Image (cartoon, rainbow, N blue to C red; front, side, top):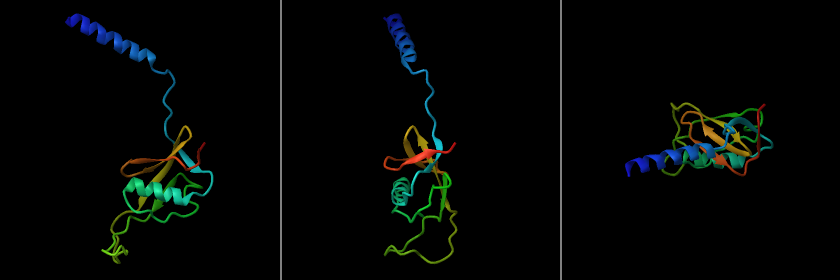
Amino acid sequence: MRAQLTSLLLLSTLLGCSAQSQEPTPKLQHARLTEPQSELIAKGIARLMHSKPIAVADDAFINSSVLVTDSMSVVDSQGNPMMGKQLAMPERFELLIKNSMCFVRHLDSKATEPLPLVKCKPIP
């Protein structure tokens, strides 16, 4: 019984390996936007960072695949930014593409969020 189970496991492993595609899985590539889409980018970053949407410039990700923003501000109980010294480093994000799907990645945490409505193209 044990020999049959081992043979069955070996056979299923071999069949599984041969059924896999021989083409390499496409990797995420750096990308740029094809047109300004600051609202969609802001919403994607908010989902990624579990925060409220931030202000994103209209030219974000147009000329570069990297976006640097001020750190997520500390707010008081009414939601107003607190005045004072900011000790946090700026947040950095990059725009990536895989096949035709765009993604935004937080450079420090490597957390990645798909941006299904955003149109971007790979940087050659």
